[in-house]
Amino acid sequence: MKFIFTKELGRLAKWMRILGFDSAYFSEGTTATLLIQALQESRVIITRNHRLPQSRGIKTVVLKNEAMRQQLAEALKALNVEVVSDMMFTRCTLCNAGLKPIGKDQVKSKVH
Image (cartoon, rainbow, N blue to C red; front, top):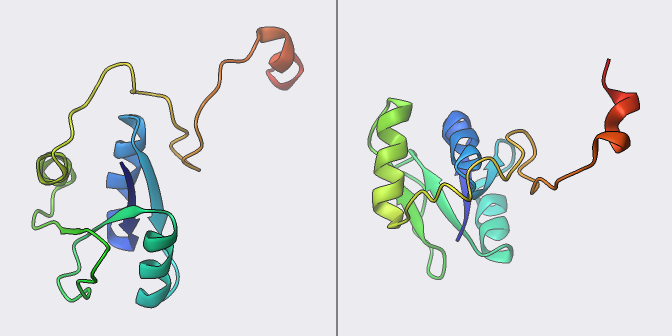
């Protein structure tokens, strides 16, 4: 399952990435752009915006909590997903790309 978080949930998107979930962060653009991206990439929209239109074909979860830890628990429950330890730390917290193992010799020149 893939997610897209609206601009007020950037920290939550980061924590979902830490837990291993494919979590895009939508910080710029219009509601229409958000809906199009969610539809094109088959993503569930996670938001706190109660005015975001509910669209057919796009699942949207509206979170009620303000505190990040409570938002995380609320999102996991609403999405009916479990945290699996093998998935944790498999995505970049900044860009959402999957992480790949790399040999020391390949990065040796990039580390001081």
